[in-house]
Length: 105
Image (cartoon, rainbow, N blue to C red; front, side):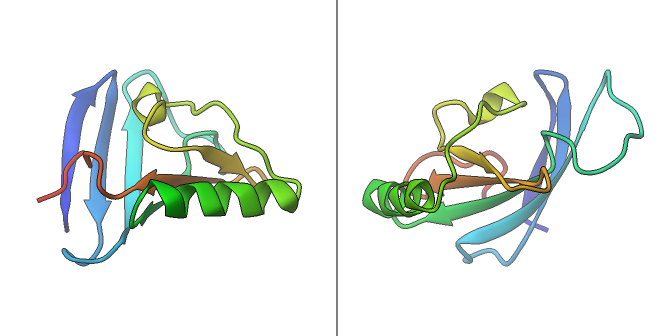
């Protein structure tokens, strides 16, 4: 486990992944939410890349493939990196790893 957070804008979360890895899996829940069918707009796979240039390169490549950023459900992700939604409704966030990471050691 890498960490977690509680009561951030009504969200609680658990962050899993190797300590030095550039990836993690986050499980979140919202105080006003309840059991719901997956995926929701807050089922996220988050990728931390080396720098802003890497995030820009991924964003450009995804745009070339027809994917464009969507507004995040959780306000934490605004300003941290673009969120993309695949055709099945699952979401991916691409973050510059040189920025702050909630729950990171």
